[in-house]
Length: 355
Image (cartoon, rainbow, N blue to C red; front, side, top):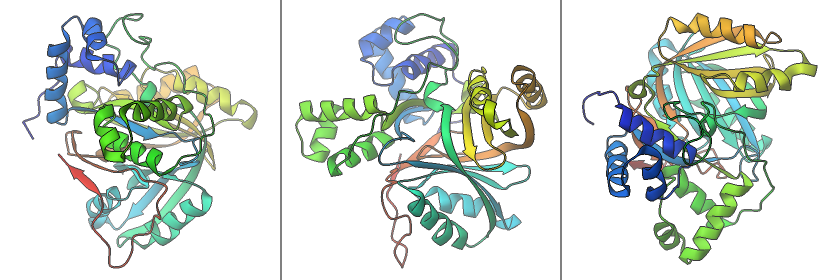
């Protein structure tokens, strides 16, 4: 990996153009950022090769293959935090893993096909990892904002592909889809590279390019796959991640979550089957904004009562991609959340693509 260098304005504009439409043709991307297709493609390849930005197809939380999404707070033996985080980051079902400061040591995003599979991962995998001393699990009931909707906010509104708002539009309405083995392989490969060509996807799955295009379009339009353009947050000027847990009256919980999701800094707003019933994750530009953000949230969403807060010390994994200390991706774990979450004995080598 190269030395830590902040992204310049041209890089940020390119990333945001791809946040608006992650699989847009380079001619369209170039028009948005005011360059030509060759330059846009070459610049993106430089960012991708450096691990500074990447595109994924994340599992949609309401699709057939990932009906259950849970946020898991983990406590560890003090000397074991980093080792535990790195071990869990190799699990397909652990979509994201952060080392945190606050009342918990780790925060994980876990996906499974159903509650029994989630329980198997938590009870027979997570709880048995040496160094784990406890966990608190809250299952998501609905997402009101998530990473595919967030924008850097450097492009003017109304330019090019998609909207120019900081937090994007809304999640696509999920449509139930039945996924076969080919769909799942396509999803796993899109999770590693969301801009993978139809030719490479067709070759990998043994289908024709037109069929690959139709299947990918169906996965995306149904909400089974959420395309998102990721960026190394510190390099983009957002080095601080804060996670707030809040309560709101049951009758106004959805409204509170929706209003939280419209805040500029918010990357995630979700209602949970548990207490506290609301989880909000935000990217901030500095530590001194942590309390200011919380004050703004309470002011804009008076129904929300913040009861717990975590600050991310080190992101270890984000939506399948392993991260270094600067937030750059170093490789990817295929998000095959439909597989048995308990590895065989002895533990076999996990499917990790190293960059």
